[in-house]
Length: 270
Ligand code: HH2
Image (cartoon, rainbow, N blue to C red; front, side):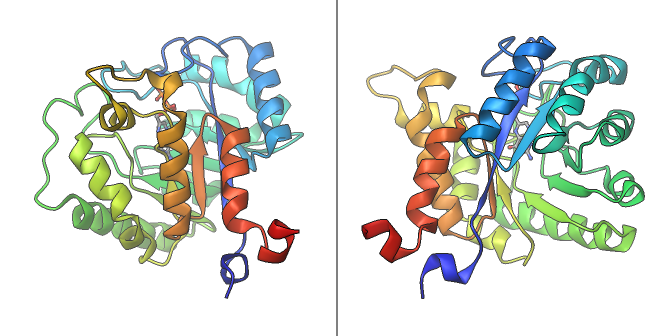
């Protein structure tokens, strides 16, 4: 059986940080016009969803007040939602509601705490695992067994989302959120265990620090913009293990790489 027959094509979520301080692309899309252009560009490259965020959650980041997140993200959500599915990357119920009113149909929630908002608004919800809070999460992440602890947390959130009445639930292991390089590698390698929960899984490894650590040669750790190979390798790996969506900065090369998995065999060799 071909992979493409076993399941529909995996989705690509393009990252659009309308922030001055994200760990990659910091400030690049922080005015609405350039952000909208970049969102449209990612849609044209094949992004199924554009994930708009007005708050960086990189290690050490300060929380951004809801009003400021709304000021940054809303015009972008409004413009893009006419052209492509938009998710709002936020931990704030107020920001989520404002973005939904502007056209977002998915709440990408790194705090896994907004199920009730998604249920009440009738939109989808991404529940992501994080240990601690962005400001301090990388100080001393600790697990007895990272994969089983993350799986158990996500299974619990999925059940709560069902009870709350969320119509579309995605689970995300939260790569880089309160995790060492070893924890991140264990989760990527063990992504099939998250998939075994029977829910659609989204994975966000794109340009993250552990890829730099693993691919470093002779002490040179590649910066975020030089982590494309690791980003693509882990996206392809995750989809082959059953993930249904990858969250990425580099949409065009990811879409191209995933075609190798999803293209029907006879078309691929024609
Ligand atoms: N990672 C980041 C932000 N949001 N959402 C999901 N579902 N999964 C992730 O892995 C994830 C996420 C962090 O990456 P990024 O948005 O690129 O950076 P920053 O938080 O610095 O803006």
